[in-house]
Length: 138
Image (cartoon, rainbow, N blue to C red; front, side, top):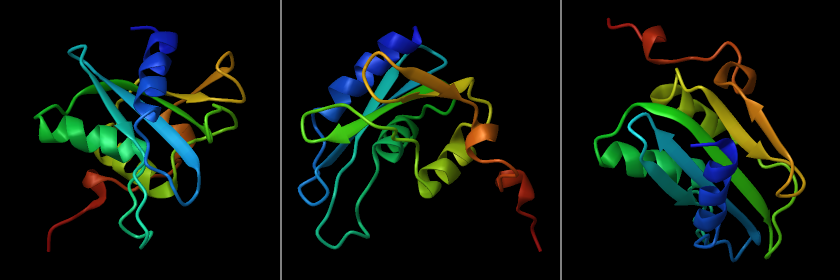
């Protein structure tokens, strides 16, 4: 699957975003190594703490279906109906990506308009990361 095709899946996921407080709608599409796509959208909550980002929604859907090998993830966002701006994963999402996608090829982030795509590796998004190998038993 091309980056552009995966980006279109993220655009479709964004349509289900629930963002009545920020009006910032984000969609993500996670491509597994077996070719399946798991879509996710951001889901806000009035208490804010229970809010879940699009990336984590997609990853948790895949993990809950027994999938743990991924190639890449596309993320799109924007206020209202427009896809615009730069919507990289937040710190919590970066840590979740580190847990479940340490060998992922790259991450595709929409910049500005649907015509602008930029890719990042996990190392670029989360340098000197802390992961499962860093946890030691006592």
